[in-house]
Length: 200
Length: 158
Image 1 (spheres, rainbow over the protein chains, first blue to last red):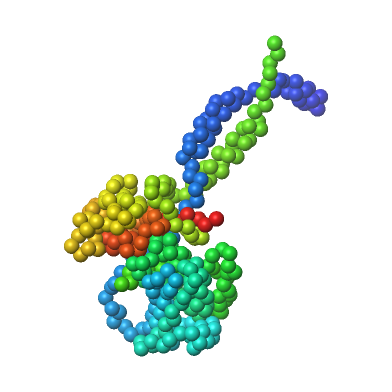
Image 2: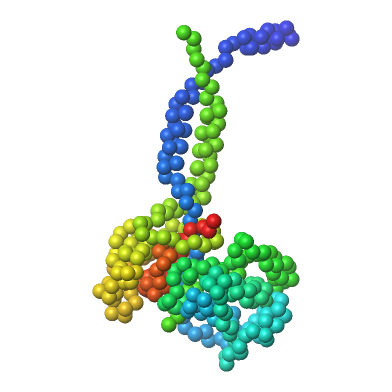
């Protein structure tokens, strides 16, 4: 029995190797590759998302809502307005309250306001983010902001500000946020739900 | 003459790997974008993917929707004749977007519109040096036709 098996094996080993013709497969691959290379876009594009400012009916309830507005009417100046927030749920509020006491003006409606100046739009965005960070730390669950843009702003400047309100750049250190339930989260996202309106 | 056996296994390996990466990059980008002539895109560090939608391109000379010329601009400004009485709505764009919105509404039932990621979305490719004064007319017209979500196309910063 083992003798038969070894003979069979010997027979198999002595058979010539089967030749697989891969020329047609090569043809298909090369043609596919050619078309993919032709139609592939090697430029990197991405999108910066925002929504239109849509006015609805005023809310009937008197519940306080998170209201963050950024007025951008000059390439080197932006005004940040934060609506009344004393009844809102918040996390680490001490940094924000210290900043408000030091640098913000009180508004009649109970909100606060700060005008930020920069040497360039890039510098302005950096300074704006320095104020947005304590707001985000105090309200980590809030994502919305309203950006009101003036006529004198260029599209590139608008994109710079929009990007800066939405998130921190990859060059910067991510934020450590304490959520309302007390867990820690690391994130670069600030206020991604940006609505765009015009400022006259 | 002797048979010359060329070993193409290595070449096959290279081709297959190349094909794999190209197909993968194709599947990652859900929409194909070609940048129209005369449009210099702004740069940004953001990297959100682009979702397919109605494409508007705005250069200093013209406004196009899905490669169709809608209006000519003069020095980066819309001509008064292209605007409606309120001086905020671009007539040709409004007509185009209204038609597109009707088509979309016919395709997507009312209950499913919120879940559809393309409904009410616009892709905007605008020149980086245009003023917001020009852009806001496009945004205003789009919003009046029911397009309230904008995807501003940007070049990724190096």
